[in-house]
Length: 127
Image (cartoon, rainbow, N blue to C red; front, side):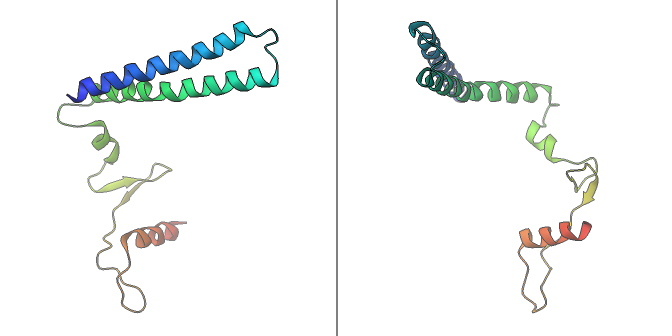
């Protein structure tokens, strides 16, 4: 069921992209002076819309290709979220950092600190 919906979505997106590219081509062929403000605007908008419609099939193709490369029982999203060490996260530099428990963290008045705030404070300590 989902594969047929994805296939239909990809087909519709490709047809729309080809339609927008056709409109840009028609504008190029039918106008006497292609380098006019109106013609350049129309062709650039049509080309941008075609690229936007092509993003959906391209991203689904890449996701399918990555899912086929992943080992059995492991999805690409789960694989990307894992660090080299269990319970560790990769920072932007690539260094491994162990996870910190934020459940028992409190501020100066004894109120619990939300996990996102505690994570930002922990990140700022590293700098």
